[in-house]
Amino acid sequence: MKSENNIKASSGYTYLVLLVLLIITLVVGMALTKNPIFLILFVFIALIVKGFFTVNPNGSKVLVLFGDYKGTVRDNGFFWANPFYSRESFSLRARNFDSERVKVNDKVGNPIMINVILVWKVQDTFKSAFDVDNYQEFVRVQTDAAVRKLAGSYPYDNFDAAVAELTLRSGMDEVNEALENEITERLAIAGIEVMEARIGYLAYAPEIASSMLKRQQAVAIVAARKKIVEGAVGMVQDALDQLKEEDIIEFDDDKKASMISNLMVVLCSDKEVTPVINTGSLNG
Figure 1 (cartoon, rainbow, N blue to C red):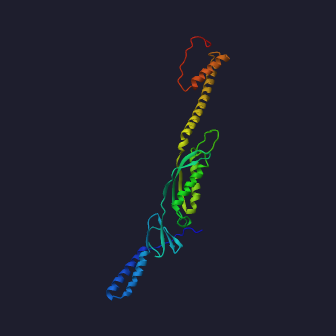
Figure 2: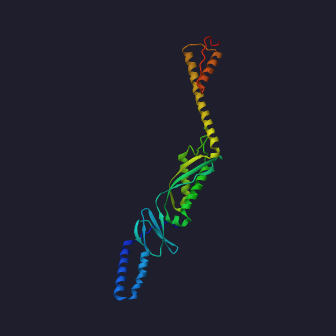
Figure 3: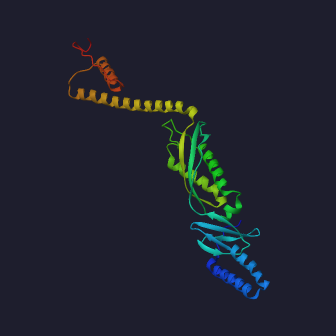
């Protein structure tokens, strides 16, 4: 497989001077001698004019002679080359590609909406020109395929906190790195350098978004309640231990159970508790 061959083109200013001299020779010769032999200079003038081209900064020209790749000019400036060369321009500037949001299924089958932001540029003009039919369309299609493959490799979220699994939502750095590697591998055939690839949008598909939001809220509530209960148990234990150490009151099993029940209600309730003052005994 061929790769890019950088070549140096001739200075266009040298041939521009030659062009001016030929034009002067043609005009003066025809004016003084009226000899039609000078008309042959029109052919040379036309060929010289056809050979001029310019290359802008961060641009390039791919030169082909009758189907044979001759090289790529990356230097910017004013040049001249064989007038029979066909020349195709390729921009070497970095480009942004914001893909469309696509609906795909994640690893566990949930439909999600996802898109990617890609920063890329042409690295090898030979591959971009001759190894693929349309390199810009190739970038679009292969990026879309890479996003679909990535989305199917990870779950959107992990509702089981006990299972430490990488997800699209929680493992963005690792997921973006995997995405960049996948796109780089796919676009290498077209001579494209992937400078950065990141997930730009990620959400559940509209038809399940409401249900999944309720599920996330339920998981959050359960986790919060668990923490509250753990804290309440610790506070009740501390209270009983302190009362026992300072010998403030003696508890039998029934009184201890009643006190624990009341404290747990107060500490775990999600609403403000209204106290009831007992003016009699604890058993009254």
